[in-house]
Structures are given as structure tokens and as C-alpha cells.
Image 1 (tube, helix red, strand yellow):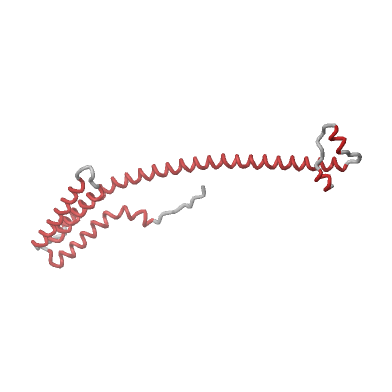
Image 2: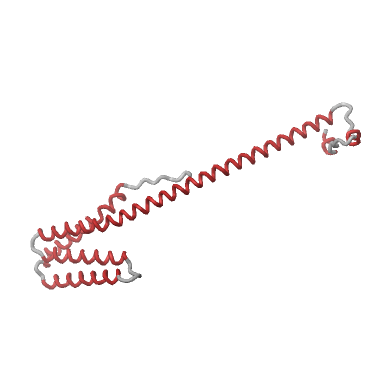
Length: 201
């Protein structure tokens, strides 16, 4: 019932939303650094990035085939393919217009794919919170019923103890009355006072 409320830090909230832009921006920046260090118009570097990009695309296609296809692995491979293609073009090109255009397209595609997973995650989180809320209400109801039952048992025990105390008090009072004769009561069929109570008083 008294669960701790954990407030998420604002960085933890916005970090997943900024991840696609950070990833594509990092690839663009590294590719432009590579461009400044000799990759501009380098045919060998362009061929290398093309081969790596096609290899990542082929790995993604193989990972997504068949019933045992792994969607996470395929998505990672296709993301690597796009990143390598962006890096290859941004490293080979001499101007900034084409790399920036590809960066915008890659960022838009990344956000489009991420939005689908965010919706699924939000749907699952809402369903989980609803399930937890239902379970919490059910447990609270059971707890209330058990509390009422325990309270009733305690009250019954208290009333029984009070009755026993009053009965003992009545027996003690009866034994102290003048002219009390336990044998006459027993002969009349009335309950006899216990000997322990008679000895005590």
C-alpha cells in the first residue's frame, strides 16, 4: 500500500527522445572529421564504406527472414547499414549540403522507426500500470476484509474474556456471602463452586 514514489530525472525522460538525433549527428561529425583527414574523394574509402554498408544490409535481411527472425538484430543491422552509408557519403563528399541532407533524412527515418517502438512501449507501460492498479485495489480489498475479520475476532475474544471475568467475580462474590453452603447447592443441582476459588477466598 505504501509504495515509494520514484520521480524520474528530466535527463532520463528526454534521453531516449534525443537518442536518434544524437546518433545521426555523431555519425555526421565523425564522417566530416574523417573527410578533413583524407577521406574526401578517396575511392578506396568509398568502396570500403559501400561494402560495409551492403554487408550490414545483408545481415539485416538474413536476420529478418523466417519464423525465427530476430527483429532487434535486424533493426540493429539496418541501422548500422544506414549509419555506414551516411558516414561514407559524408566522408567522400566535398561540400556540406549533401551530408546535411542525408543527415536530415537519416534523422527523420530514425525518429519514424523509434516512434513505433515508443508507442508499443507506452502501450505496454499503460497496460502494466493498469494491471498493477487492479492488483493493488484487489489486495487493498482483501486487506480490509482481513482487518475486519481480525477486529471481529479480537472483539469476540474480548467479550469472552469480559464474560469470564464477570463470571469469576460473581462466583467469588457468591462464595463470600453469609450462609453460603456449597453442599446445599450441589444437592439442589446447582453448579458447585470450584475448590480452588473457595480456597483462594
